[in-house]
Amino acid sequence: MHHPGNVFVVSAPSGAGKSTLVQRLVRSVPDLIFSISFTTRKPRPGEVDGRDYFYIADDRFDAMVRDGGFVEWVQVYGHRYGTGRDWLNEMLATGQDVLLDIETTGALNLRKAIPEARMIFILPPSADSLEQRLRSRGKDSDEQIAIRMRHARHEMELYPAYDYLVMNDDLELAYRQFESVILATRASRERMAPAAQCILEGF
Amino acid sequence: MHHPGNVFVVSAPSGAGKSTLVQRLVRSVPDLIFSISFTTRKPRPGEVDGRDYFYIADDRFDAMVRDGGFVEWVQVYGHRYGTGRDWLNEMLATGQDVLLDIETTGALNLRKAIPEARMIFILPPSADSLEQRLRSRGKDSDEQIAIRMRHARHEMELYPAYDYLVMNDDLELAYRQFESVILATRASRERMAPAAQCILEGF
Image (tube, rainbow over all chains, first blue to last red; front, top):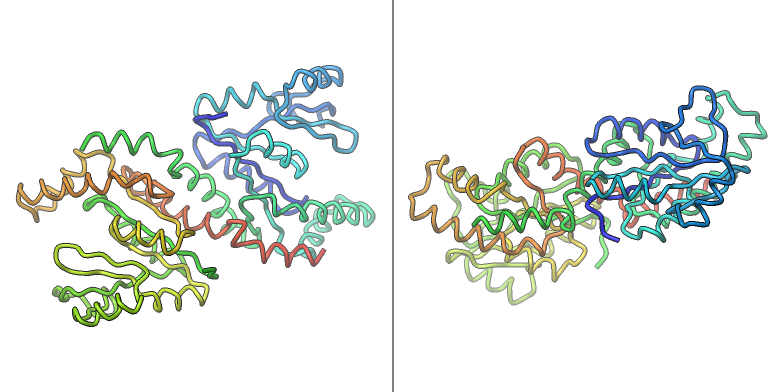
């Protein structure tokens, strides 16, 4: 399927600094919409339906899966998360670029559905630095950190499936690289050819 | 051939604002070297051998052509210009990225020699605006401007051979897009995979 808008996917091991980068990107780059997923988990305090997620019941999620209503969906820790096909197509049809923040498994599924999606992986500078960042949050026990680190390793193993690998060592540099993927994609021949053709015809 | 460094090529019709963009890019982006071409034309006042061009005699240019010493070369208005193979390989081998500012004909030749080169074309916002910019320089007669516009049209026709088309309407926006091609290429999987693999092995 061809869209006027581009699809960008970002994934990262927990603690790599993805949320900070994503929030700044969505604030700074015009015409870039952050995707809102459907989920069967309950809202956490402070979360808002239609802003953080679309919260739906299990049977409605089942029905959407059955009807092909998801571009991709995954189950994580007993809850399901999915990207709605109609929602995505609507955004793209208006020429908006859409940024999806999804886990590696969901990202690989999305790649199958939208092969032209640009996939970005945020790399921590090292395993040690990731572990330090997780500890400095003070939210997790040693055991939980060990589980997160094993999960992070599993996610890291999937980096070869991504088009761009942005190392988040220096935040400013990482941000500029992250943003550059969106800007460069907008300057790609595929995207700009109609405008170029129009200019040429004026000569 | 595989290099640690990337090759970027930039072309544009005369008057599209390429020089301004290139100068700023080379000042702002670290580890990006601006290519110095060989030429058989004489230095103009203010030009310096080894900075603007390597100025060489016709028979030496002939010998370099014969020995395969150029990655690409072209003849323009009776003078020849070429990119030296040894010079380029030396820069790339040290991991420097190299930016080549060459005419469309030379760029197409370079593409054959280095298929992985990223090729960037600077678009004027319109034929009219290009003509106005040429007139406002006050350097050319009406006849010379007509010749430049015909030449510009010929160059514009080759835009489909380029990977990125940067429209120079708003200079700041154009600069950010131009720079983003270099930064995004540096974050590409091909370039970053060795670092990612090294990080993964630390988990």
